[in-house]
Image 1 (cartoon, rainbow, N blue to C red):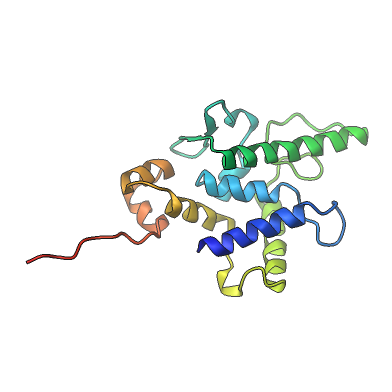
Image 2: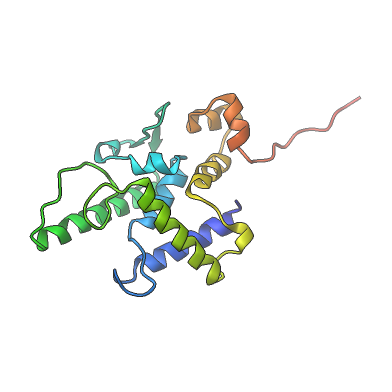
Length: 191
């Protein structure tokens, strides 16, 4: 996936998330932050869904995959983390104003009822969102991608050597061949 389709989808998600909830064209306000955290931390979608509040530390975001790592703060990552927390707090505040108690959960991503967002809910939202993006010509049908493709793009876009990318991704050498789509620059053979 090239930078263009991702950047177009992110801008589209930010625009639609800013529309008042439950009105035509609105989407869940957490979607842009989900996209960014998944991409910037090189997580699978389900790993992003299982982030909880204590994964946010002073130094960065601790990932919660088989091989954890700490993704250091950048202004962009901090904006995504703070945006996700603001969406979470908005759901809790709205439910409190309605006099409804939300079960105590440290989940970063909550659905509109204050429950931890699950994969089915995300998949439903994503399918509707990406179909709208294609229909409105934000991206071309052949540029369609899934939340899991964000991990691949994040790994490919990671700066550094193959070993540094592998460490950042928490993947084996064999899996790096699947996820890293960058084309290595090599010297020609010599006689």
